[in-house]
Image (cartoon, rainbow, N blue to C red):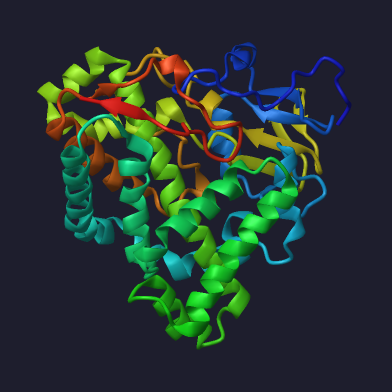
Length: 399
C-alpha cells in the first residue's frame, strides 16, 4: 500500500462510555474504506460502511492469521499474539478453524442456553441478594457485572468457581497490558492454570472434561490445543459480557427516556439487548484481517493482497444507511442485524450465552433496584484504555 502522509492515527480512545471516539466522525462520510495509520507507522485500510463490512467479514480472501506478516497489529501490546506458536481459535482460518469450532458449537446452542436460563437467574438473584443486603453504595463491576458471567462460564467449562479471583485478574491483565511482555506473562499464567486442571483432573463436570474424554483421548486434538481452547473460552466467556452489563447500565441510566420504556414494557428487554450491543460495540477492534488476494470493493478501489484491513465494529454499527439515527439509543429498534458479534465463520461462538446473561441480569437489576443511579458523574468514570474490550474499571452506584 502506498503510504499516506495525512492518514489519521488509529485506533483512538473513547472519551464517553457509550460512544465511539469522536475522532472517528471524519471516517463516517459514506465512503467504504479509509486509510489509517497504526502506532507502528504502517498504513492500513479501515472499513467504514456497513454493507462492505458485512461482505468482507464473510470473504475467505481475508485471513485472520495473526502470524501473517501483513496482519494489522493495532496496538503495541498485541505483538504478544505473534509470540505463540500455537494459534487460538480466533486466529485460525478455515478449514482449521472449522475443525475446532465444531468441537465447541454444541455447548453454546440456543437450546442449551435456554436450558441454562434457570441457572443464570439463580446466580443473578443470589448476587443481587448480597448486594442489596450490603447496602449502597456498591461497585457494580466487582459485585455484579463480573461475577454473573464468571459463575456461568465456570459452570459450562467445569472450572471450580473458587478460582474466580485468579482467572478474573489474569484475564484483566491480558486485555489491559501496557506491553507485549506483560500480556505474554498473563496468558502464560492462564494456560498453566488450564493445563493444571486438565492434567490433575481438577475440573468439575463440563466442557473441559468432555474435551479430555473425547477429542483429546481420540487424538483429534493435542494437549496444547485443549489448553488453548480452555483459556480462550474462560477469557472470552466472562470479560465481554461483564463489560456489556456495566456499560448497559451506564447507558440506560444516562438515557432515562429509554429506561422508562423498559420499565413500562419489560418485554422490550429482548430488543434493548440487541440495541445496546449495536450502540456500544465494545469489541470494536476484533475485525482485523489481512488480504490473501486482491479484492475489488468498487470501481477504482481495490484492496491488494498483503494489505491489512480493519473492520471497526463501532463505526459500522453506526452507519446511517443501515440504522436510522444511529447515534440515538432506541430500545425498541430492531437491530438484530448488527455486527457486534462479528459475521461469517468467525461470528462469536458465545453470542447466545451473552444475550441470555445480559437480558436476565439487566431485567433483574432494574426491577429489584428501581432507584438505581450512578454514584459519581458519568464523566468521572474511569474508562479502560483502548484495547480488546471497551469497558469501565469501576462502576459506583447507589439507590
